[in-house]
Image (cartoon, rainbow over all chains, first blue to last red; front, side, top):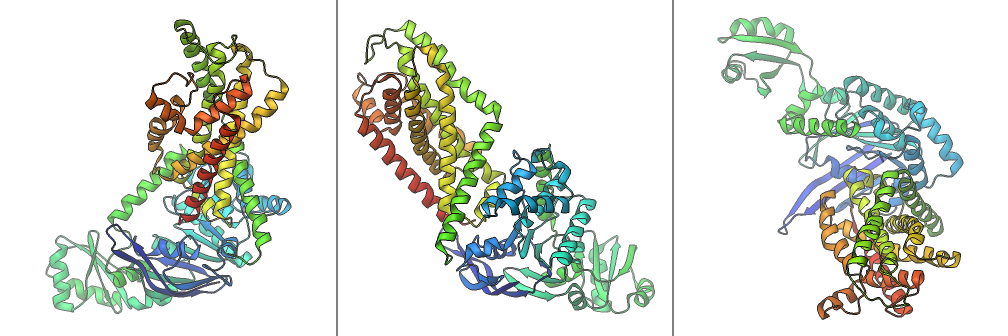
Length: 327
Length: 263
């Protein structure tokens, strides 16, 4: 269980100015929930996670994890949470088993429990056959699975995952989600994760959207999608700019541009579409109607897509680093 | 901090042991590194040592049978301890780069225990590397009795501990492994050259004599030399005092630096 109450975090930057990364964030995550923490880069996600897992002290406010206050009992909190970082954090020159052994020892687990937990978590992520291989021979997906296994070694009540599927292929991504769902069902573990993949956020039982250090939406994926209301019309025209102006002028809808297409919300999209096409005075290349996704929610609430250009390039760089380390 | 101090202390000691064990385990696994760290001082000893001793006439303190090779032998042991210790400490920077340090930093272990575990791991590894250098003793005309070896082992650990702690402090100011060349050129090589490892320090020009005397490694080399070939420049207690004092200050700094780090 996680309780965050009015968390603030200020950083001093060079020249004496202060930057406030987190501005009064509060939320509550009941046991057994898969809690998605979404936001663009620099929104305060990582800072919030760092506060929750005791790596940073909040400037103000408090956070209680599994009944322990993060500033008063950091070691208790640390023992009761598991962490899977955004960037790889394994010792590649040790074997899978040795990495888990190290983790178990440094978390103060007795030998007997360590051995039984190593077997258990390795079989869960289906790596028991590779347990005595050096981690540097593992693929990116295998490393991620091993990191998840390691996060579970000491049987934490909460598992934090920072971008757990970043840079992985779709098959491995869905595999990792299978593990997470199983964990939640079988072990009642609370899962707190951040992700850039909006389709993955649909897997969460609750979602918080954070932007500029503040929570701008909180609810189940369904509740959030209702905020968008109606359906999404998505179209590509020869000239998107004049198409957008047309929609605004004639129908009075707010239009958002994303990539090479524009989109807007309407009630009963299927009925709207035929009359709309007839009324247009421009060339439509493609047009479609769809139910709102979390991507739309995000776009509507923050005014920009979660995966902007910069994020994409960073992600491919990370994926590249993973591959290179594997190679 | 938590309310059960004894329980915490046992967790911290376990954490310290874990970090020590990882360094020792990785040292023995990396055969190439051991080979490299053995061959480099051997090159100094065999080529540089032989060449200099034949080409130049240098007089040495100690008894008549002390040749140049014998004289520099403890200094070369000191060099391998210095390099192994600092290299082991610098692995913190590598751990930071590959992300592994984060796994350590979020573990429920006090930071002082992390720093001390690292310092002890590095000094143990340096001691092993130094002990490996003892196989060259017969080739340089040094007779090592079992008693001498039993004195040398803890001495190498002692010198290694202060040098590893110094390496940990240096690692805190390194942003990436690229900074290693800086450490090499501005810390390790000057320390080695100014330690009296390769030449007697009696006849040095004044300025260099000063530099040699403020170099803590000088006293470490002197300590090793007095144990190996019973030749020493400074009183034994002074050697122990300087190496120990320097080690305490560096270890304390390493602990403070680790405790202050967020994340």
